[in-house]
Image 1 (tube, one colour):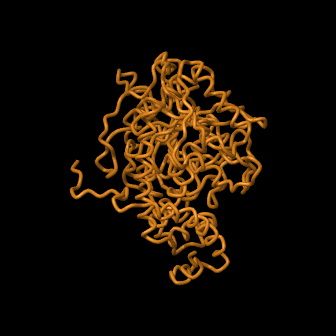
Image 2 (cartoon, chains in turn brown, blue):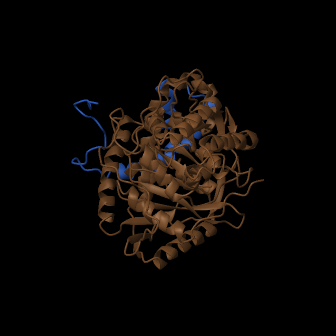
Image 3 (cartoon, chains in turn cyan, blue):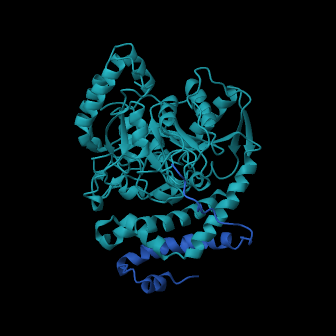
Length: 461
Length: 58
């Protein structure tokens, strides 16, 4: 069931918010020992919130489509009185006294937060094989990674433990788990969603966004969390709209860019075939497919890595006196960031501005781009290299190659499932738009979804 | 090319010797890709850094 279906069932009195929450808690209790998607479950608070939601509906107070819907948070977001681990035991004792803005907004929209999800240590990696709390398992194949760093959020949504979850995306950390787990993930425009109360990884690259079972569900969650927040210095005052696409939304005449370079290089053949199929479907819906050359995305990835390692090492510097308690992959990245020159960080930020201008020109030719989210499907847990296009690639760099550039530019991207590989693993495509064009990319995603682009629900063991 | 091992030793960060190869290899490849890009920069290109002289008021 999607959020919209659950919301309809609530209003038709076929279920109550307490029923939905009890069902979510039961599924978490049953399935979480195997999936390891949740780090904490807020049973009492969730039950109480659900009771309140039912009482409000009975008294005629309807907070909207998220009213009474069980939702989860990546455990990097503060929730008053509940520990925030950030995926590290070094945060033991961190019990926030106030909620993150996104938590306030979800609860104000009536959502019932049932717990906090597992993640890659410090949100700094793409496997969610957490050295402190154990690896998150992909619900499509427990031997495979769910991606990361929001791996618990992706796995929990895919396994039907909850209806939606929040994640964060610094170099692909919403879209990679969305693609690997076969769910929808939205990385909004930088500044659209407040980062207040969310542990930072790299301030100028961090984004908060939803993972959900459908495009319209992601849009519903985005409606609740988007908008200016004076407590986040980078928050945008750009006006928000209703981001949920109409039932009969059309993409006729929309100019969709089909990248001729970069995005379709070094791909698994099943990924290429599925994404090309979705682009053909967009054409059949009346979109104008325009082949287009994109700016140098390899260069943009280099710039993004330079910015990220510098900012992350600064953000996580307080932990480095306990480096023996940090996983080897993360501590290596933190050492790298501490060794680069301040001038190189500044040069990277100057190059970033140049690429932003290059992309602004691209948006005069097309309204959005469609490309694969990741070049491959979910790797096996512990796998460090993957063979793509006849050569071996490091899993971390391969998984982030097609998604990182969007973080550097701060522009929005929506990942949605578009097929299954021969081994039955989900494949994701991403729709990339200009800054503040979330409504447009959600409309394209919904039109594709309505036309049958997607995958069946994750089979339960 | 930068001598990353020397930079690491001089940094005082106490990076264990056995962990240095992993750190240095990535920095070498990143720096090799980054250096030509940085050389493209012209003086009028400003960084994408955020600073406001006035605090936002609630």
